[in-house]
Length: 113
Image (cartoon, rainbow, N blue to C red; front, top):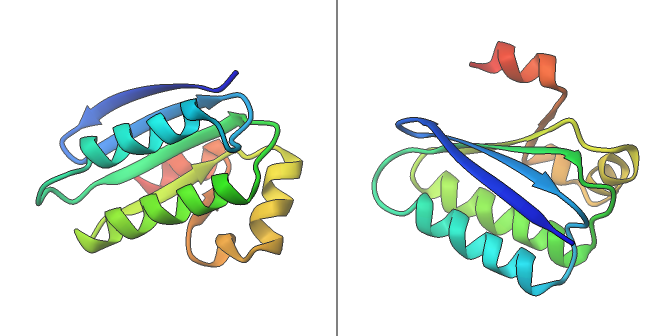
């Protein structure tokens, strides 16, 4: 079962720990709504999605990532995908998501901020 834990680290920095399959499900759809609601307004958000515990992603999950990216980009923000599992990293590469979203490991993420 998919779960998410949102933590607002500072003004404009949202850290989200994800766990479970990032696929078509009511939980993933609700997650998207929570993220978009949290990042609403004029504040520029940088969203870190910790994907270390996400073993699977499908096309709907990839579409959701792109929707979050677009929403953040409109306000000048960005999203970072941290520590994806090998299957997820390959899916991001094959679909060229890794060209529009920063994919990094945990060490790179600390350097980004």
